[in-house]
Each structure stands twice: as C-alpha cells, then as structure tokens.
Length: 185
Image (tube, rainbow, N blue to C red; front, side):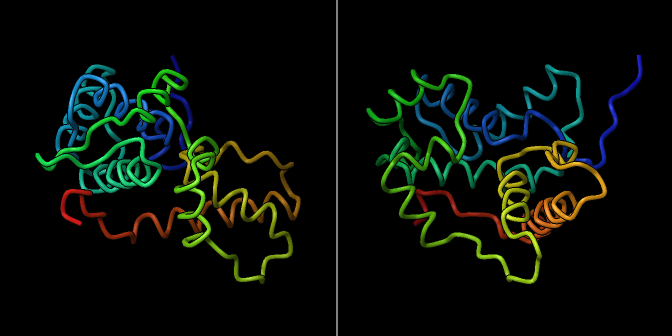
C-alpha cells in the first residue's frame, strides 16, 4: 500500500483543531484536565494509531495549550482551585453537541470567544491581490486543515494567495511561544 503524500510533516489529522478539542472534551467529561494530561492522552493516541506524531513534543504542547486556552476563553473549561481545568455547564452542552470536536466556527458562537477573536484577529498586510483567499488559507492552517486542501484551481492567483496565507500561519505557529496554562494566569 502506498503511503499518502504529505507535503509537511505536521499534516496529521490527530493534530487538527477538531481532533484536539475532541480529545480535550472527552478527557474533561471524565474529570479535570491539564496540559500534561492532555499531552499524555495525545501521545497515547499516536501510539495506538501506530503513527509518528509528526511534530516535536514542544510544538504539540503549544497546539494543545492553544486549544485549552480557546476553550477556557469560550467558558467551556474553567480553572478550578486544584489548578486543573474543569468542564463547565456550557462545556457539557458543547461536548454533547460536538462529541467529535469543534473549531473556531463553533467557538465564535460564544460571545467571549468572538470578542477575543476581534481583539486578536489577524489583519493581512494588504499586499496580497486576493485578501479573501489569503485569509482563508491563513485560517485553514490555524484550524489544522492540510496544505493540500487548497480549494482554488492550480495556477491561479487565488490558489497562490491561499497558499501564502497558509504558509504565513504555519510560520507564525512555529515561532509562537508556548501558552501558559490557565492556572498560571
């Protein structure tokens, strides 16, 4: 059987936004979670799948920390006195509605998260001739969508613009500093 073509080492479904939030929500439904406990669960999933993680541990932890932070901002998780994150009533409902995970298109429905996005939103530099496709590529990368999922026809400006946005988001991901656990804020 031929191995699927992967342009980037981090093009793994288990690292998508929806997969990471599903992992976190399933764990939180059973009890408190931490970055360490979620990282251990993710590593166990890769072992169970018989696949290499595709990203170094520190980069996987950055992705998990970002998702934990997003779920905390959306008030799906909240910090407990024990320093761990606990599922809120809103989180239990989200888990029931989205057991396979959720992404920013769902999180933005929560007022707190929508306000957070408005404050921290990416603003393109305006140099790209197709800002819409650039931003779509940028957001796609943030949501864990693969580079090969570019929806535009090859050899078009929109195709190249989408790729530019995706690559910019990837570059920023690799430079991002690890987020602090909510318990340390």
